[in-house]
Length: 325
Ligand SMILES: [Zn+2]
Image (cartoon, rainbow, N blue to C red; front, top):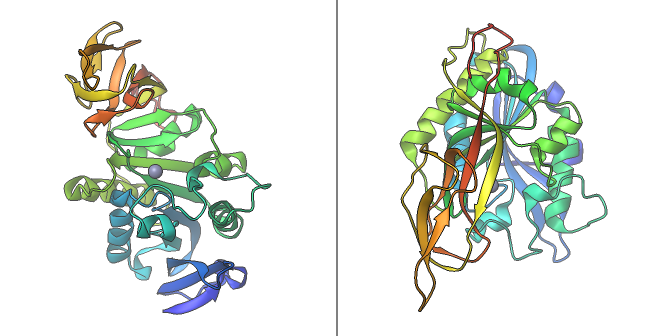
């Protein structure tokens, strides 16, 4: 595979082709380097540049598989513009099959805009940001739920992105206002529309759900004219204006009696936690909402998220005037 130093990358003038390159970000102190396999698909005409990134968290394999399938599905003759695919942004965490790597224990998707910190993972994040994400028309960041299952969803920073986010056809659009140094937040600070697509849980691949999300991403490509065909966007998708995390009141074995997509009421018993050598404790929903994330691992530590509850919102779709609430 051809190797290119990231400073020498010229995506805007890439020859019209479908290429794989090994993108070299920087050297590490032991003589090894931080490199990422990168697919660049440059279309037959000019158009938007879209970057799809996965594997910022090394144990979230649904996104890595979707990136792999995107490369299989899209030919340079099919598109007008440029598609950049970074399937494994954090190769060191991926080698360890864990969210973060032991190299520096930095969470890559919490390190955007942290200029002061010169650790390898945050350097990789910020180098990719300056050289690729910042030059993109749209950024799509793929994740899974770690120790819990996520309902397929599209995360955005503000309700203004709802219209575009619908084209992913995940059925659920979540507005998460908080900025913890994520890629999506950093991109939006630079006015680049950015979307976090989440699916399933860590260390697993749900192939059917991945195919559905792949189709949704390709529908988005149609909506923004990377693929010059009309999009087919589902009606009746749900907007969530906020998300509430329910922390485990104690450590122990957890059993939930609600599942993904269930609507729960404030005060409802949603399961129990049985502490080691203790008696079970009820877990109570703090407010009403829909279950968007549910613990998959059967053991929790005090303070771990047990479920995430989405607050149902309503918004007129500005593009069509349909009420999608
Ligand atoms: Zn993640």
